[in-house]
Length: 229
Ligand code: DC
Image 1 (cartoon, rainbow, N blue to C red):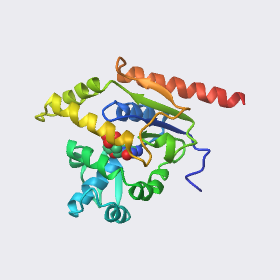
Image 2: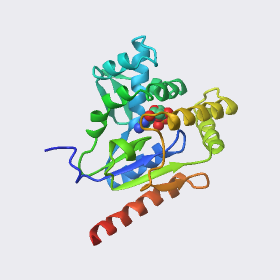
Image 3: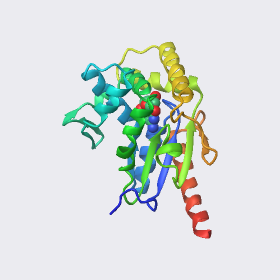
């Protein structure tokens, strides 16, 4: 069976860092019994693996080559690289920055395309990232652009890190997010942007549950309009 067959529905959720798209995407996938692709984690793994191999994040050619040698596995909420659990390392702020840096290279993005498409498995997939709707799954059944004001995102990230016992400063987080937003949306390869056929979901004044309900409702509506055709 061809796992990339377009008949398997995809919900594409794109948006900036710390918008809550990961939590929303995971819960939507759980509710629908769909698979879940955290594409940001893949870029984070690549940044981490490059660092391990002493490859600088600006070296597009060496990183693209390295991606072909990585054995990546997502297992029960853990991120595995070549058999080692690297979840904590990959979730660090440093690897968030690294991911954003390696992600500017078109050759690296191309090298990761097939891997991401393989997540499209029956009965469906919820993919979260920056280019789910524009590049990886342009035929997605539903496209959501999920965002929130940068100050609110910084506050949420600050709270998250604080709860984990990490020593984080709000101003540093805000600045990091602004730099990342700019890099992710200004790059030439697959920049972060709302597609014309994507629904805007601003979570500045919404809870995670309200955002999940919005996506589920939009998905049900998309199924109805599909049936009427
Ligand atoms: O979603 P995240 O914060 O884990 O993503 C980390 C970085 O990876 C993000 O700043 C840009 C990059 N990324 C990307 O370019 N394309 C994706 N589909 C997902 C992430």
